[in-house]
Length: 418
Image 1: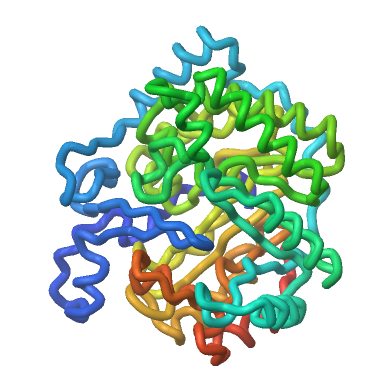
Image 2: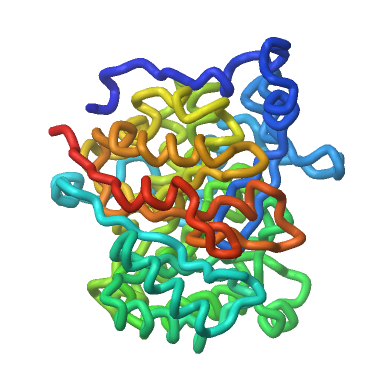
């Protein structure tokens, strides 16, 4: 559906007062004044969403009242205009040639983040079995690594196993922290020591190390390389730091391309929070897009992560334009890679809902030009630091039982509308 020709239809959970006493008590307790966990492979984001406050109240959790994040996009956009000018970064109309947007994909490829059975107490045999299961679901694998724990030998092994299985690899690097709402830098210990007190993407030590890491990953020549996951969280909370990252990303992009010209290089954005901001300030949507545009033209593909369950009572509540709304921010028919798609089976979801959500994906994505749709986890994980949502987003339980969502994902058949 063309951007700009339909009105925003924010889902009820984004705009309503959640005081509806008619909702079941358990579901209401989960979704009212809720902790939102953006579920991703081995990562955790915790945000507090109060639906009855202005602008979605993208506030930090009440357990730490000293934490604040930016909640007024007017402040963000004004800062983008001023700071980017001083840093020499383009803003507003992108220099990227929209006419060169990717051709429309008729049938998306499917993929999944490979988590083995019994993770994290798995064996090498479990890893091999996970690849065999993944082959039945799609032809793309996803591996996301926090920068501070990146082991290039492990990444190399996973890329090799993917190629041996005839699958294409999507590598993701997360340079922002899991446990601090993605607003702090996630640095390898030695780089943190060398950087001293100036922990910033503006620090030459950190910039050099990040570019070196990007080059190391490029040497593996993956089809896709994400140099920051859900980076819009940083823009929402620390605008100036986001601008420093944007300039660093552009430098790293150029170096990656020199090593591996065919690798698609990009960052990912968390979709639910983009929708929240648009729903609260629909007259500022073009301004909101500047968080994306500032990375142009060094953005080979638009990539999203999406976990709707904390914001919606059921998959049926998702409006028809839930994902095609992205074309309010990018040119029509630009390719959109769904790097992480998830609906949990515990916490804010259940197995029937996960299955229903997967079955709805063809309709929800029928107006989106997407080359790849990757599910968040293959197997559930059992990590004490994760909540029920995070641990249960897999299509297979931790002990190997296939959920109804497994076959639903396996049977997906997309028919994109022209």
